[in-house]
Length: 89
Image (cartoon, rainbow, N blue to C red; front, side, top):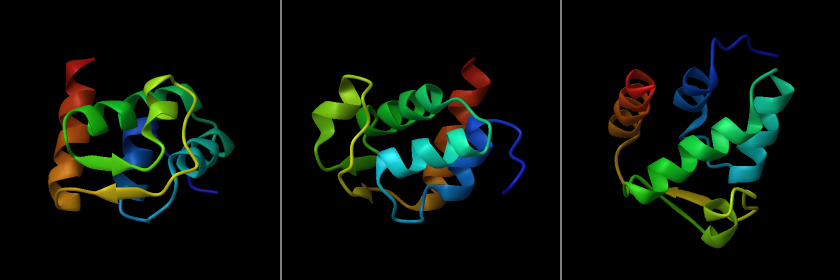
């Protein structure tokens, strides 16, 4: 088990691991993080055009998705977006 400071750090580490949205959210929960916050951040990434998620309606409804996630932009750019989201809080 890794010790992540927050959901943003977790996603920065895991974003390019080719896992489903639900797997990421469940892994975050297993690491003591907020599953819903991870889903919210992933939803922002999807809305802003950084990722594509199969079965996207589930994530828009806050339910997650077992669909595969695809990066639309370079992982480094996505990590920068995640950091920017964190600063907006």
